[in-house]
Amino acid sequence: MSFSSLQLSAPILKAITDLGYTQPTPIQEKAIPVILSGKNLIAAAQTGTGKTASFVLPILQRLNTDHKLRGKRVRALILVPTRELALQVEKSISAYGQHLELISMAMYGGVDSSEQTQRLIWGVDILVATPGRLLDLAHQRALHFDELEILVLDEADRMLDMGFIGDINKIIERLPEQRQNLLFSATISNEVRALAKRSIYRPVEISIKQNKASTPKIDQWLVTVDKGNKSALLSHLIKEQEWDQALIFIETKQGAAKLVSQLEKRGIPVDSIHGDRTQAVRERILADFKSGQIQFLVATGVAARGLDIQNLSRVVNYDVPDQVEDYIHRIGRTGRAGATGEAISFVAKDNFRNLCAIESHLGHVITRKTFEGFEVKKTVPDSILNYVPKNKRK
Image (cartoon, rainbow, N blue to C red; front, side, top):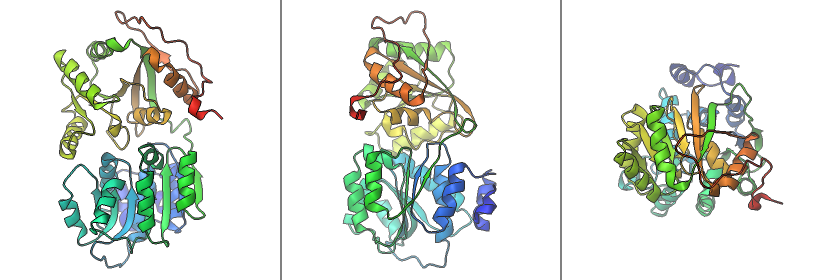
């Protein structure tokens, strides 16, 4: 199937051709016709499947009319969990809509709101926003939703995990009842389904499972390590294996600062991003990391979703995440768009249950490697693939 067979307009087809797109992915092939028809949609699709284009392309098509934009009005609203994802989605909108006269913007917290308020004065066709900042500006009457045509809940599972359910409900209460609703999520949990039931009327449901041909080529392996040896092990691997680049995930901002200091003392240049860094600083650091000026970046979970870094060699789970979904999204930063990648996890004895849950989800045991000089004192037991966390047990 070609994009032209999806009934997309010539300006959109030209844009995606210029970007090197040849064939739609499975989620694009299934979602675009549904959205173009005006129906509501719930779609389950993993990261890296072309999800963003699957809703942005038909939204651009549907909004490309002679509609006269009014001040402080929004025609399509895309809610996302993080600032990084807001910027990434808006960048995609600009690229796909480069031959259209539609206005888009990203709205997020962590920066002065005055510039965002100013941009809303003349109205926006497509607004990509994080829930908190959107509510703040709605309370200030900086924007109104009476002309809203389309609502997208992107990364719905992540938004609920981050505690945005209250804000999302408040936003939905402000929206006109007659609108198209689109929900995209990596997983359709009971919480996501409950949200959909409250806000989406008679949706079409799509679930995309990756086949072997489309599965990211990620070499996953782990090292069992005592907690006190983690930074030394990481330094050893960077130097001995001559790593060119790595995105290193850690749980806390305090841990990030400590790890940066430890690596710098060993002569390894590194930077970090976390929730306390200003948006301007985070954008600069991410740009430097993408360009290769920064080789090693330590990040808390704020960067796990929404980052699209071309040819990222590897990710490191310096801390094993508590949630399986976080592990999947973290390693999904590498091995994108057909490239190969590497995902390494440092597993201490305290992480055993998390490891079992991850391997149960993957359906296979992750390869273990050992390195001379880093033998563990606290042994990590062999994996139990059928382990089920207490909160998941029926």
